[in-house]
Image (tube, rainbow, N blue to C red):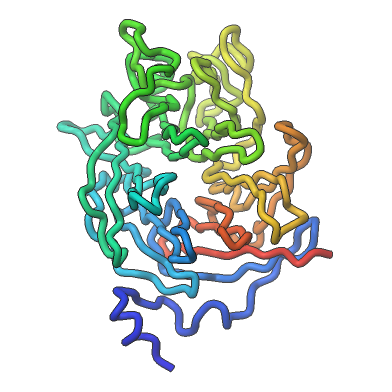
Length: 382
């Protein structure tokens, strides 16, 4: 049976010869049984993030060169969705995170973070939103709601992740553009978590509102390159993680007005193996210690709590992708404390860029490659 005419009428193209549900899942070991991995779609160019549309309408996936795609749950890949802004697609820059408005069912807002070129040689992280059309082929009325200023990146450390909390506030986790000292500068937006209303306005109760010379958007500061963020479903708190330099990747639970240390405090060193001149040590008075730290960097990206019913052995766990480490890291929690770590999918030999829990209770991961994949994970218990 040929699917091409049917898919063409929907603006979809299949990148697989057969629907993925007919393919035999690959099997990998885990501590709790056999991990079964099904390829939902392949042929993505450096995919960066995904989010699920409601009512099984599919998965939105960003590709770093600047494309937003819709993947059906049967594995069909759409043509690029129109209305996506131009991006600075160099080095680590490009189209990054995607998130839905908490009121998507009524307003259809889709939020994107991306690297945006400035007037000169530098770029910065920008966030905007557009309304997904009824046929899901375009974003309408796209508008910028936030710009990281000043623009200081020559192509690296943009961050960024987007998370809405239970009260509808938008948190944006940002990188410091590899301009270390800026993470401590409260008149700049590098190396910060910012908190905004969905339209980009600043909440009156942000911790630095009204302070002269301080950006009112700031929620927390002293961060390096944040590439993971998720809302804890049991406490409602924001968790983020960030790349250290050579060593010192860390998870934080950012609290209002707090300083998370970079570059004054770090568990890492320069890539030359020499100490970081600004750093005074792993603990510095007035800064918050990491909630969890990897002395040897797995190069973390993407993060998701699991509170589904399908993968019962993993209920209450936290999952983090690893790029250089080429693994999916599973963290067991007792309350907020990490009590055990397992590395999954190491045999896959792929960089894991993002991980999300699907509405069907499966885990989904993106592999960050020129021929990137969207994979669905199931667990056959022992």
